[in-house]
Image (tube, one colour):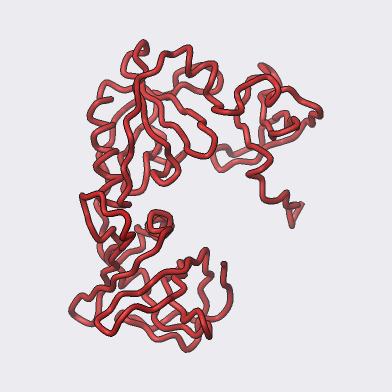
Length: 306
């Protein structure tokens, strides 16, 4: 459920007055835990604040501006806290701090979405350790990257500009595995269909350890370390259950221009449709750049300006 519109009249538990209008990005059904009892609430994460609503009337009950927000963490920090699925938000209240406890089966997603705005929080959030590393690119070249054990996922940054290029959220990972015949190599494995991404670093063991700690401490998830694989296994199975020929053989192909925040100018690509997937290929090498199962494509949206 996604809510939009004016937040006029919302009571605030922080020191700042509520926004006149803040876009709400996503909403989740949660249970609020207090000394009065347990109550169902809609927990909405917006561009400027977090708001809770009474699900029966959709009347707002609380709002916290990010400038008053301090943290959102799993209740049983550092422990396998399932099945309670509780999390605690901490916020400023006047000159003091206060907290509230909630629970939801979507706890990891709620924390991940809220932490997208952590740079707006009233207290600076600790950033994870970073390592100079390499990623095996779709062109089969090794690309220099900075890897960060972030609070909600493995972050891939440009070593020159420090710009965030990609995030591999713990909530979306099935596990992590070493690549035994690739020096310093390890793969992160996505949970939806087993997509793998290969990195290499002299700090591999430390990276894996820090990722497992961050996943548990910040999102309450256990990031599993799986059995090592060989480089050949990655090369033949990097698209998981969609690695076979039937999933990468086109029935239609289109020449397109791709616009990306990574590049100043559009780049030429081949957009390929198979019976089960949508592929992006490099037209000069025909290498696959991205693969999306059709079952995960929600919509094709025309550009408003173009």
